[in-house]
Image 1 (spheres, rainbow, N blue to C red):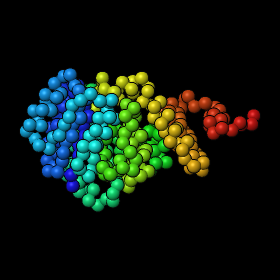
Image 2 (image 1 turned 30 degrees about the vertical axis):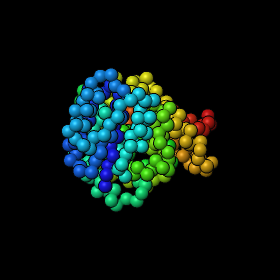
Image 3 (image 1 turned 60 degrees about the vertical axis):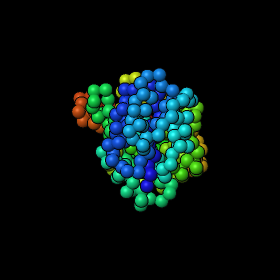
Image 4 (image 1 turned 135 degrees about the horizontal axis):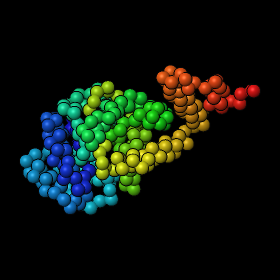
Length: 287
């Protein structure tokens, strides 16, 4: 079972060598590492050439492109494997993941999406979150990241290459949310299998696209807009069910936060707490 790992990169000399080495260290015999460079002006291409001369599983090209989605599409078009993975240049796998994934895919129908957990790292070299997207049902993903997290990074999921024949390639004009759009389409078209194991590592570090977007609040706003658009495409009954479930969980979280706060600060418990709760539920309490 051939696994095609696609790495889009532009001026990535800081991480390209470690990215290449991560795939080598997987010691999976049926892998091809397709590196799509966008015309880097640093040492990225020089490093790729050095490794490609030593390792025949590395295939690469370097030319100006239209961004990350365009680079990924080029890699998909080149891919010979029946299993596909996207590994961004600054992310990496846990040891022996490709062998583990290959064994699981032998039990799955085509097309399938296989999802694991992902460590999120900060600049201090600390894991600040472990992404565990256990519930991958489409309607539940629409509840939002804070209620039902979706995969944070493609280093922790793999899928049949044939899935793109059903849902199409990545939108070359989408430079920020291509992963989320892919997942929302994929879960509707593929068999989804979640495995509670850490497979990927995602560096959310200063200067990265994700870090900058998180700092400005753009990430949260973008996700909400996308989920709202997909929500509007649902039949009326399902739309109502998702909205109701989301409101229920929001209220549950609100109550849990308040209970915890007042348990720790009983002196601040308001006399009219019941009235506040009733108002939060949307009713107008009688005097």
